[in-house]
Length: 267
Image (cartoon, rainbow, N blue to C red; front, side, top):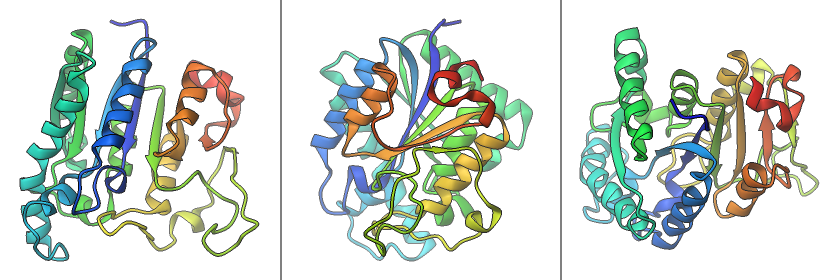
């Protein structure tokens, strides 16, 4: 068993593809970050993007479930191939796992999946996990991998989930409506009414929005674990957090007794 702390990075669809063009520069930047992080952490990558990338090859209406699942089927191998090219220059081997929420309903299924993850990390292979969108139903409509990544972090023994999104963090009010909105740097509790708000995804291929990210954070808080929310185009913030051990932006969700960033590794 590795002595390194285990972390999960989750990246959303809008970071990787707009439905027309795959953002290879952003993928390459993410690969470079993960290469650096792997010197100190065991990293699991959870990646959305299959539907959006599928749309670059087959431009059909993504608003029906069957079409969305078809696009996911087309896009998933293209997503993994794009990652393979990005990580190849760093001599990092990758592996693909497709999971859905129901895979965690069975202890046996969860143990088998964790065993696979453990074996991959022990052999210095980067696991890349996506929802099994071709057959998933509720996940493909609501999740955008946010809640799935929280399950992966908890059940696969990660100390921290980092969600890379199209927002800078969790604000005290809607930053799209209020110019004076401020990022909450540390959050220990999420009110129930906030978790029940309407989902408001920003990108045309996103399905979650801030609410599913807060649901992921709340799940981990309830389990005594931690999550960090930051902007995917500002990867230096994650570098600061994980390599320099200082929080320069973003929102850290952690239990009160962890005493913030310094204590999350002891959770």
